[in-house]
Image (tube, rainbow, N blue to C red; front, side, top):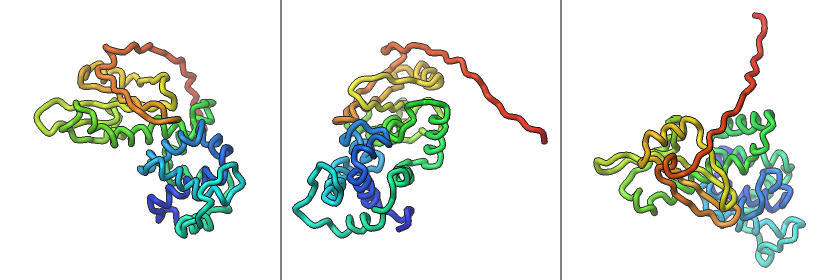
Length: 252
């Protein structure tokens, strides 16, 4: 089965197969604290309901020696059995890489950044961490921003690749000022968020038109909190890091 031909449903089924087959060992390798976090993060990142990922895991549970019974009272559905037969021989490391192939939005760049972070000794370089702070949180925002009264009547523009100091530009249908939205994600209900120097500068310039949208509690049930004009209304601590710049040269 060609990876590029996988449907969205097949990708969700693969995630369920991975979580059933490799159980807690698989969670640990990807950096998830529990299954609920994995369902939430993978589901949102793929653009499917987290419950769907859970249901597919339960579908495969009777086929593996874990403590869950899963859907043991019914025969596995054919389209799930086809995925099982095609991918069951894959080992933990290769299957983990496979998930990155199908879930990372910008796969090559995301994998490269993860490897760079690991090589430089950063602990927060896991698959789960990158999705929570990026893909999953951003998808949550896309799914929910119109439920916020102040954003009604605005159209969404994705600016994540532009490097303008925020992730999304909300453009008004009428002649009003646009809003800049920076999205952050947290695994827990509370935690620390950081702004780059550019984000901090842009937030200071836009003031009431700049929002930080924080998606919290991926490990249980995600919810969001909105912070308007964060530079004036929140307490940010300036942190300066001394960086050792390494260069490599050769004769040509």
